Image (cartoon, rainbow, N blue to C red; front, side, top):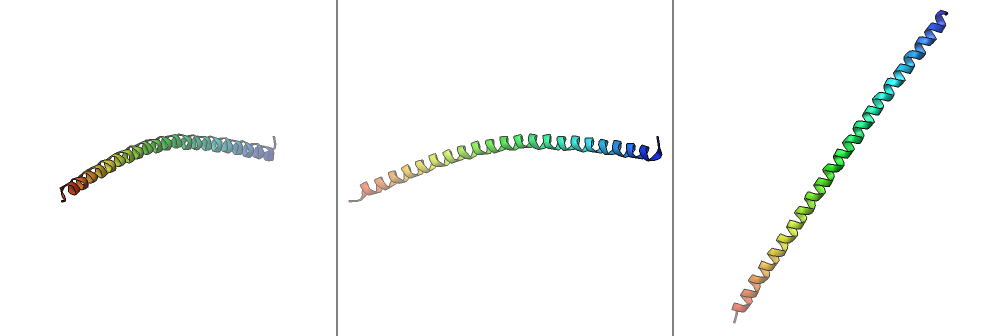
Amino acid sequence: MSRGSRLALAASALLSAAIVAAVHIQQRRELERLRSGVVRDLERQNQKKENLRLLEEQIALTKQLMEERDKVLMEKRSQQP
């Protein structure tokens, strides 16, 4: 084999190895990104559940406050001559 053909073979082998390595790295990054997406989705779902729980609690407290306010107003009205 001539020197030029050896250099061409070596260059093509190195380029092929670099491409294969780059593809593997890219696949690992993509897999990590997909996994982190699942984790973020689970965190969002948990946050949404917590927000709904807090909203329901706030609605219940608001209702209780309004009932107490109405009760106090009714008592005041009944005490007036």
